[in-house]
Length: 88
Image (cartoon, rainbow, N blue to C red; front, side, top):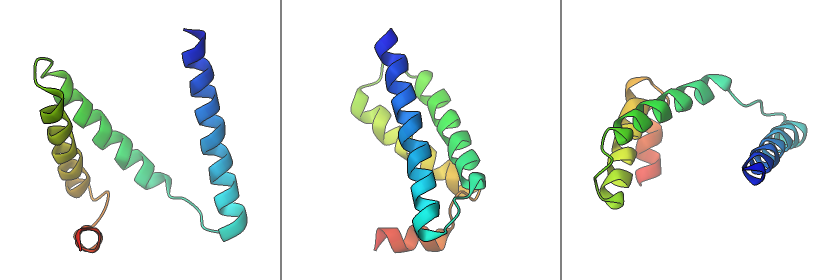
């Protein structure tokens, strides 16, 4: 149980360090707006996946990807132009 909390603390330290270093060297500020949209999409995806405990894992992964992507499009977490560029 203690190892899990240490892992969380280390991951938080890494995330904060990455944020500070990114800003320091590139002067690019990260948008918290996108973070909140990503978190909302992840929570909605988790809710759907949680309702399907007996499904095979591969189908849950595929369904999760589809739900997350659709939610991000609906709440404008990313735009269609960016999606087109990624899929090229």
